[in-house]
Image (cartoon, rainbow, N blue to C red; front, side, top):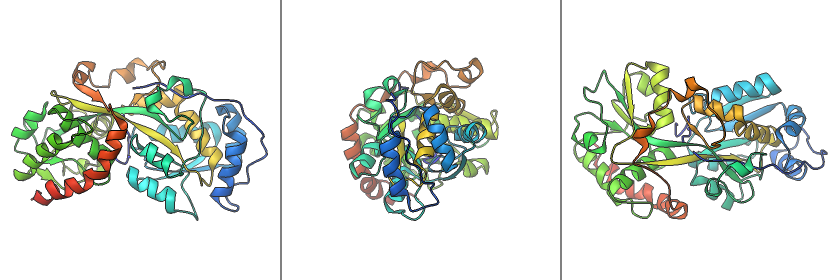
Length: 373
């Protein structure tokens, strides 16, 4: 997720927690199936605080996530904290937002517990009945646009589409879409048919050239020009490919780009928000209705929205949703200068964007990918 898979980036507020109910639940996930466990969890701890969840989660003792790899938005520190503070073991399988929901829907034997999806996929998960409701005590700090009405999904952090440039391969790193179009290097955008990060890159270009969620054609037209020049790369811009020098310029969430930069070599890469404009969006926490470890999943969400969890995300260069959280100075200093975000716009019409995403894969295949050389 960054990835799509990995550091899902990502400025908002938070979640409210009601009071805990009966603590009668909790057959461990080793027993008879996630759906039964999740149903009990829904009844007993739908409004529990982080502290109230700890003993319930510890009975399960483990947690599986999808689309939340260590390298994305510094999830590794959150998983390390869950282990050191609460003794919860964790595993992740990296995948795109659409793949996460497919996994939620089809995996019955060993269902994943929690996922991190692009915000447009939150309502989709809710509509399909895939989510377990849970509001944390920070609910009221999350703006209405960044959560559904009863805890099926909630945005933990935001990101803005940026350019990551390998300066060993590109002499003049692009700072604008116009620079990008005039370059002589290949540009990696990722899988627009599946990945939320790549889809938002198309929206970012559309916004920069007069389009919006209802009109992605200006963004499509921009990528058609790159494809016609033979400059769209099929390489998926993930950490391994970037480390190997297989990516010249990549379109990534700012938190992914900054994370990759510092992970590989801060002096080798340059990161900029495109001057003409970009898009800011968020990634949402979704808990699987059929989770094998529903209490551990709720504890993870509660921790993600706590001060410590939000600072962990900021350490991964994502912008925390809770504006009240004060970031350490050394964390704040590693982020892109705020002046570069002047042209960045949040997603304004989520319903229109949700509809646009349904058509975008086919449009991309027909108008753009068919031209890639």
